[in-house]
Image (cartoon, rainbow, N blue to C red; front, side):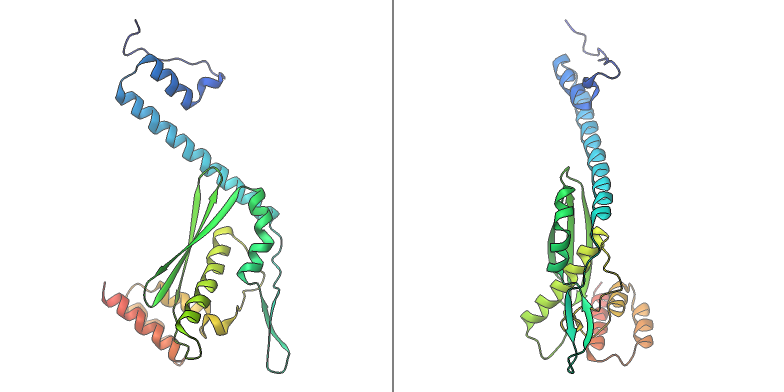
Length: 231
C-alpha cells in the first residue's frame, strides 16, 4: 500500500514531466486534496504563462506580416480638390484580416454608453486564450445637422477604429484626420485631453487654454465637469 506522503519523482526529459502528468500521477497516488489543489493552481498558472508567450509571439509575427495600411477613403472640398485621405475601419480590417488569421488572432468590440461619452473596448484574443484590451472614449457630440442615431453611429465607428489600431499596434502613416465632420469638429488631441482630465482644476486649465473652440468644446467641458462633480 502506498504511503500518503509518498513523493512522486519523474525523470528529467520524460514527457510526463509536464504539470498535467503530475496531476495524473497524483490522482493515481491518492495524494491529499490540498496537494491536488496546489497542482491544479500550478497547472493553470503554467497554461496562462504559455498563452501569454504565445500571444506575444503572435503579435510580433502579425506586426511583421501586417502591410502598410492604404488610405483609400478620399474627402474632397467644394471645388473638387482632395482635402485629405484616411483609412476607414472596414478598409483596415480588410487589409489585416489575413495576417490576423494566420497568427491565430481574433477581435471583438464592446461599447459602453456613459451618457455624454461612449467608451469603445477592443479585445484581441489569441487562439491559446490570452487577451489584450484597448479602450477609446469619445464624447457623443452636439451637431445639429445629425440625428442622435447618426451621432452615435459615427462616433462608435470612429472610436472602434482607434481602439482597433491601438490594440494591434497598427499605423497608417500620418495621423488620420478621419471624417472629421462625422467624428466632431474637435481634434483628437483635444478630445483625449478632456477625457483624461481627473480633477476640476485640470479641467479649468484645459478649458482656459482652448477657449473659443466652439459649442461642441463647451458641451464637452460641461459634461466632463458634471462627471467630475458627481464623483
